Length: 296
Image (cartoon, rainbow, N blue to C red; front, side, top):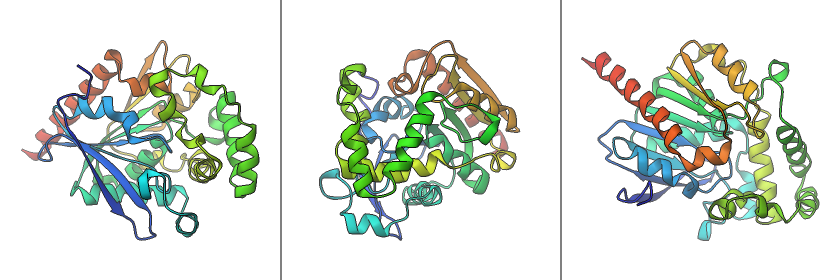
């Protein structure tokens, strides 16, 4: 049995004020404590299915897909004119997170930020503390200026995003130059999901605007304002998002703890293996217990 069998997921949509249609997935009993999975920018919600199924045993679990990339007909995103009228910045994506909570009538949730989603989770925890019961940040891709180094992957992807975000013509040129043998390096069951942002030049252009905004979002000003209990997860050898960024964030947060695995990266997080799920479940159980104590 897979991690998500036995926990049916529900797909719904909500339209934001600026015309973005957000496609959402949820699982579990809405009467239970809520977990909002803030996934990596541009990734299909199906990539989080293992976590949805696992966490839905004791929680109401919700996630959504990035604005402009999935909400249109057949899940391909809005038409170009609508997309161009929409906002593409980090603040717009923070607004999407709040819209998802409001749609599901969730006053307060545990936030689970994966990769670039950790940036959005941090912003919401700093600016809307009343909506956050706890927060976990998994292999976060953080912009911290000179406070933490970047991997070559972070530097190279950011450079590509900057060029591709200039125009559709620039995006088409960059997209054409991206090696097509990348799938050989990815697990077959995840390749199509992980490479969704690179499916065509238009999708890549949109992804560059949206993910580029998150990669450029300096979160140092948010860190002192975060009061929620926070779990920060990384590994010793993550070559995608530098572990030093996670260490710096954990050090700056008032109520944080770290879990550093010997090995791991973004793909291992999405697989929700036994080691990581044990860490997540223990943290959530403790946070839920603290919530109950406060309510008594």
